[in-house]
Image 1: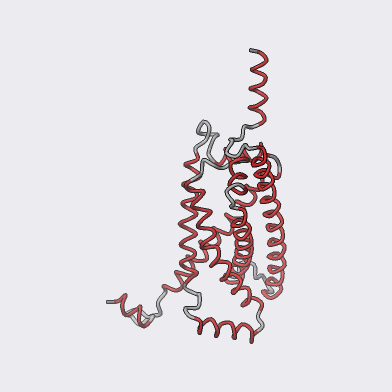
Image 2: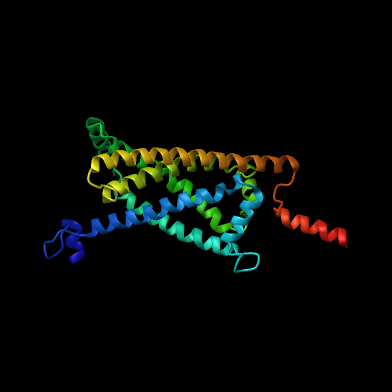
Length: 262
């Protein structure tokens, strides 16, 4: 009965305001922070292909815990992807609470934002749109990683990007993730006053500058990384070697050396 009363009135039976909205806001903020920091780390890891194929292969094997398990275990990557997927869905569910429920509500919010001319309010609309896109694009990507964690590497990832036509999805996902993530982290800092200091207004201006710099940096890094995978994928397609597993340079040299001695 208490839940029913709280649901209708937004107050507990003791006539206190419900704390549920605050708790849900906290969950949304916490999951958003985890996902935002994860995406930055993820981008740095996948961009290892820009250094070399061997380096990207080493990073992949490290994530598969090859330093503990001989040869590594892709299952660990699947588990990590599943955890991120659960956090991702939880964050999306929390965010949906604040989306307009019908066109009339959208009109009111849009008119209010245009009338105020408030930049942060306009950023919210960008974040809402990119979040909606990410719900579909990100779910596809995470599902693929969960079910094909053994197909991650310089060649396997490149073949997926190019020969399996994933690059259009990744372009859209990259744009959505970087805009949504940087705006989200900026709004978190403002909401919880993490860097307010003695002059919150000046701090907000600095945070906006940092946000713009990070957006540009990760977009440039992301597109450069995607271009590298597409290039390798195209080369594999032309050579007819799609599906071939990558063999590190050190192993190739060792194999050739052993062959000469024999």
